[in-house]
Image 1: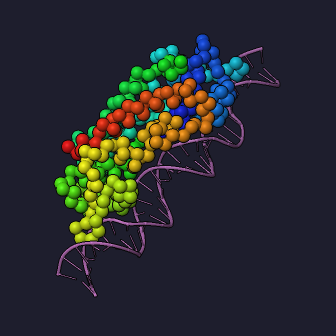
Image 2: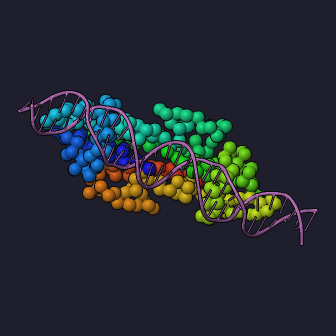
Image 3: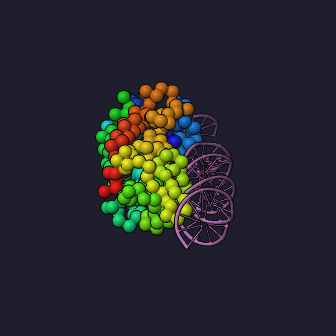
Length: 136
Length: 136
DNA sequence: CATTATCCTAGTAAATCTATAGGGTAAAGA
DNA sequence: TCTTTACCCTATAGATTTACTAGGATAATG
């Protein structure tokens, strides 16, 4: 299940991507437009900024803005940042690989085999979908 | 993330699918072979039986066995039974649909659009993979 | 210097996950 | 019948994650 954090984060990013000229948008504006708790959104945008996705400006006329062109932001980056690993099990994860404690032979594992297929497919979708694609 | 319950459930089902002639296999055997806590596995197999996936036999020589041919069991059934919805958000779920509380226009929602693609792809994989496919 | 709006740490209620405990019940074989 | 075997069933509990909320500190604008 997708966490609310990720869901809200994507919605906020799309909101910013639709904004012209990268003019800063205030948290309160996004919060109201997208029906997201303002304080919760605040913490989400903070992590997005700390990870180089967003820039911010304080004071009057301040707010958040995208640092890159939406066309240059694939959903793999967004998902890994907000949701974490794309794979459903750590043993098929590219960026967060971990061996299963219980599994003796990974190559013979049915779960591994199945989830590898799912990961490959999901990954391809996220790779080929940018923030710009979702903003139209 | 895939729950341990689902992971263990799939492993157990594959174990049973590899068994010849549907001879009952004891919980303790599966537990040892697959490195799964016996009591936890017991509860998992119980739900699989209650949902028509497995049959059981008590007493000496008893155990669990598949009720259908592994070729006739698609992973969609297994996943829905153990893990629940296949979709990452309820608003794109076929069998567990729910409208988002915060979302005004579903057709214009970026999260909906993206997750619909993911669901379609994942669903196709699960539909086209049977327990027999995983047992080789 | 007052207003605006982000920055930052901490905490917390609720839900979910991952089991474990402790017996009860039915079947098979002697 | 009696004993052993193995599934049946409910309850509970610790750990982790989720989805926020509280309460101010800090910086920029005009």
